Image (cartoon, rainbow, N blue to C red; front, side, top):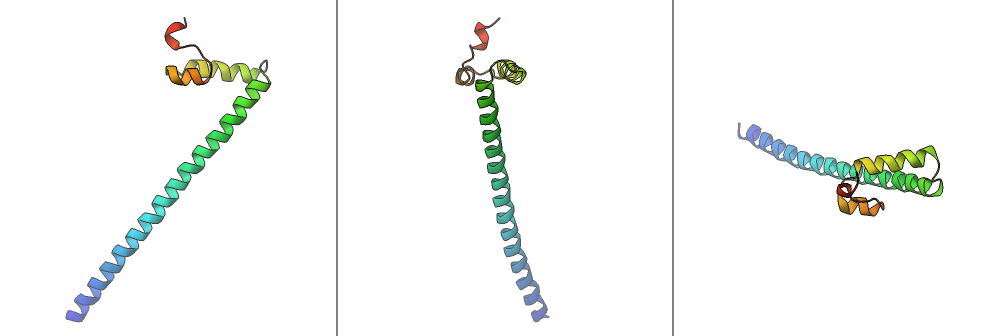
Length: 90
């Protein structure tokens, strides 16, 4: 009976080690997914802003400008895009 209990205890310890390893790998995977998502957003945003700057009269540039004006509300963020503060706009 003692052998059986010892084996069960050894397996439980192994299970705990494996669970910790799985958790670490999942955490690293999630972190990499967040980094990849951020990088995609940076690249897409840079592309969109460059296109808007180089093609100011295009429909895309006008639409992106309007969307930025509508959805960017914090004063410091609006300043980044050269937009007037929301409370001064009517």
